[in-house]
Structures are given as C-alpha cells and as structure tokens.
Length: 544
Image (tube, rainbow, N blue to C red; front, side):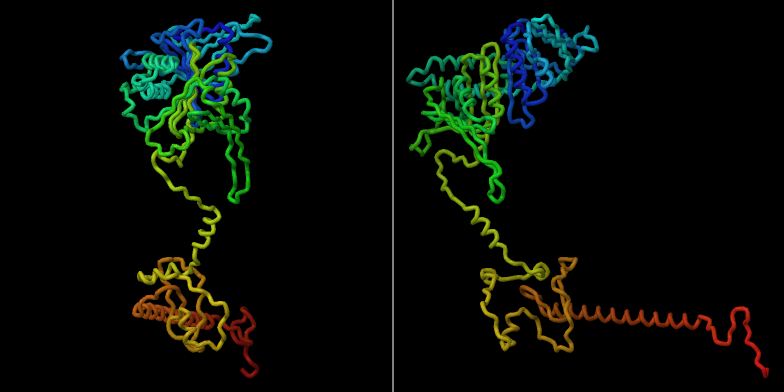
C-alpha cells in the first residue's frame, strides 16, 4: 500500500461527502494530490474561470499513511517538489471521475456510515486487477460492507498558488505598514498576519513566491489588494434572500461605511431593442461594523473627495452559491476570508476550520471603462438612433461604371460636394440643346439618326473589372474622361475589330454556299425517263 486513509467520525463523513459533491459540479474529473501532511482535492471548470480546492489535513483522518517510495505501478503520478528551505517533498497525484465518486459517497437510505476507507496499492505485491485503482471500503451501521474500485489516471500536480500570492501581497501591503503605525492595530488582525506568515513558510509550494518585502512608500497601483473577513452567516443570508436561481452574477461593492452585495442578471435585447430577457437585480447592504475585519487599498492621488473610495468586483453566482451552501451546512459560526484586487483579477475566498481548508477562486469581470485615479475623462453620450441615421446618410449612390472609369481630381475638386442639388420642376421641351448637352455628361456630338446605332445596356457589368469600357458611339460615364488620343486609338481599334469580324463572317458564308453547290452537283438526278435501278439503259423508241 502506498496510501491508506480512514474516516470514522460522522461529522467528517458529511464534510467529505459534501466536498466531493461540490467539486463534481465544476468538472467531471476530480484531481487528488497526496502529501505527507494533507490530502488536496481540487477541480476546475472547462472555461478555466472557476477553481475550488479543499485541503484535508492529516488530523482530519483517523488513520493516514503515505509511502511514496513503494510505488511500482502508476509512476507517472509520482513527483518531487522543493520548498524555499530546499527541502524535497514527495507527492502522488491522480484524477478520477467525480460524478462516480459523488454517487459512491452518497448517504445510504435508512442507514449511516460507520467507517470510510480509501487506499491505493500500486506496490510491488499489487495484483494486476488493483493496479491504478482507488479502493473504497464503506462499513455501515447495519453491518454492510460496500467495496468499490474506480479507475484512476496518474498525473502531475501543477499547483495554482493564487492563495499564497494573495496572502504574500496582503502581508507586504498591510503587515509591513503595521510596524510603523502610531496606533496599535486590532490584536485579532495581528494574529491573522502571524497565521498567514506561518502558512507561507510551511507550504510545499512557496519556492516561486518572492520573499522581498515592500514598504508603504514603495507601493504602486499594481500592488492593490483588498481584504474582507466576515461571518459565513452574513453571506448565507444574502444567498437565501435573493433569487439566486434566476441570477447569474454577483457584484460586491465595499466602502469605508458599508458593504453592498447585489445579485443581478443582465438584460438581453435584439437589434430592434426588443426585450428577450428582462434584467433583474436584488441587493443587500450592511454596515462595515458588521464585518470582522476589512482592509481597503487607497491612493493619495485621488481627486474625487466628495464620496469615500469604494471597491467593486463582479463574478459568477453559480459556483459562489455552491461554495457558500457547502460551508454553511456545518452549522457552526465560521469566518470566511476574501481577497480581491482590481476588476479582471481573480477573487479568492477561504474558510479555514483547522483540520481542513476550503478555497474558491473565480475570475472577475473586467471593467473596460475604469478611470485611472487622478485622471478626468469627459463623458460623452451618443444616441444609438443618431448613429444609425448617420450610417444611412453617409452612403452615397455609386455608379455601376465608377469602378471602370477612375477619376483623378485635384484638391479643389475634392473639396466640393459630389452631389448636386436636384431641381423641383422639369424643364420644358424647348430647352436649349447646348445647355442640355452641358448638363448631361455626353462626349462628342450626337450623330444623325441614320448613322445612330442602338447602344448596349449600361447595366451589364463586364467580367474583367480592370478593363475600361470604350464605345465608338455615344457613351455616358461618370468622372473625368481619358485623354482624346487614347480615346481615338481605342475607338479605331474597336472599328478594325468589327470589320475583321464582318469579313470573316462573309468568308465563312461563301465557303458554306460553295459546299452546298458541290453537294447538289454530285447527287445523281433521277429523271422521268428512268424506271428504277433494274433498268439502267434508256428504252428504245419506236423509230430506233
């Protein structure tokens, strides 16, 4: 056996069952990491926006054994980590199906669990049927024994040390400043500082945590960290009072005087501003005097002194509700710690009961309209209807020939408007022909009716966009025309092409007529004096 643990206390059975059920709601797979001091069980959703981790300490179990040196099967899950003190620790990690575990650890009907055992063999004497299997043994009060062996997949543990980083930054910002403050801080807050400092030094994964300490004069806005500590019952009352089943997000706003929790759902509208889903919100507000502790990060460069500074973050409601309901089911008054930075940074919640620690990390919504402190931005309001009208009016009419007759205008021509005002009344027929010719973009003079040919349709777009259409007769086009020599050369080229086509057509018709005549000559003529194929010669007459 490389690992063996046993739970006998009834309260710990309930805690273990609820913890597995909560983690199975995040993802189908649950990952477990075994160390000498604790058993880490964690899960992360598919979008990587929410992660929950539960650390069961060694004293949580009535029996706890871990011998990683005996590992023979599943060596992929064995690894070594080195802490800041250069001490090497051995771990064994694996993942298994969380849905199956939540069903196996479900409380039996009309019975209660007497003991719950976990074991992994994977040693030298391990039979092949038990290799890479988690052995679960449940003894009930009715003298029933249930055994399960779900399959496990050995993996490497990649710790997400957001909890250590936030606690380290919290100590750097507030713990170091408490040494130089004139007034004595709350002794309970000082005890929290010492507790977090011990946790950082005892952690297996503190090697990547920077150990330098910053003073208050060296702080920059990127070092912002805010801390709240309140009773779990306060958050439980908020969950119960709001319709959390119909809301998707929660907004937390805290200032020097009050804490406001808002559960809301964003409205959904279509392109015509028709309501597809109504917006909903419900808020609970309490004074900061009801909180155990709170530390808000403020800067001296804030220009707005009319209202106290407030910190606002928004995150998902589903995983937050599941976490609060799980920790509130133990019927004891516990304190929950919360850390958050700027919008877009993760929010971290922790509940420490001594023998186990529950953690929740969620990604917050980023605020794109966040105004930096000390800068003022003039607000501008634009009507969406005005933007639609401007888009419609800003699209002028385009000629189908505009792409084939590119115009080169001077700076003075570009300054003028291309759209001419339209007349209200139609001119009479006796209007001057010269003036009519000036208004219509006609090149050359109108030929007599005898020589005028019907032009092709102007709406036929040629297959080659880069070819410029040239005509021998009257042509109507937009923009500045090409130079006259080039125009005449193109016209003459088109005339020669038409003449060649006509000559070719005439030559082919003559050849066709000659072939028809030859065919008629070669065919045998059947005259009246012939009687058929049996009598070839002509019959003799009476006087022959």
